[in-house]
Image (cartoon, rainbow, N blue to C red):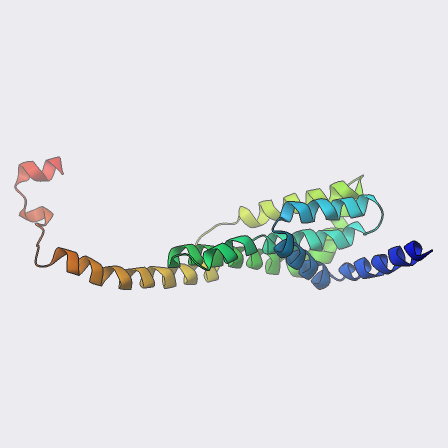
Amino acid sequence: MPHAGFVARDKQWLALAAAPWAGVLAGLVFTALVQSSSVTTGVAILLVQQGVLPPEAAIPIVIGSNVGSTSTALIAGLGMKPVARATAIANFLFNAAGMIVYYPFLRPFSRVAVELAANPGMAVARAHLIFNLTVDLQPHGRFAFPCCTAVDRATASQLAARRRPALASRLGDVTFPTETALPSRQRSAA
């Protein structure tokens, strides 16, 4: 019965996901490989419904898949302009920051999600929804995620440095009238 040994070994490997860090890492890596967090979430729910994976272990996998889903943009951004790369990096940092904020509460969050759901697969799906809503609906100001602000500043300074010489060479000695230098009729039309 080689099949029984294979299944038992796979169950032992999947049980490692019960440690939140292993589950998050597994979700991140698997999603980066398949380039789809929906596939990762679907597989995790299917494994829970089949009794192969406990729902408390599937929830960290699903949360890790949110960070792994940014790999597509990171790869695509490699050959792009600085703004595209910065957007991909900010997306990664935003999702990683959300996961880091949740990480200390992952075990209790998973436990409560499972206790409140009648179906263990539904518990995983609801936990995924709650995670995404709470991370995405946070205030997106300067203090929410400083890493995104830092990426934004770095990109803005890179773009400004590149555009100044090009703009100066196109304009030459052209001067533009200021608003106060315009006659009053032109000021009201502008």
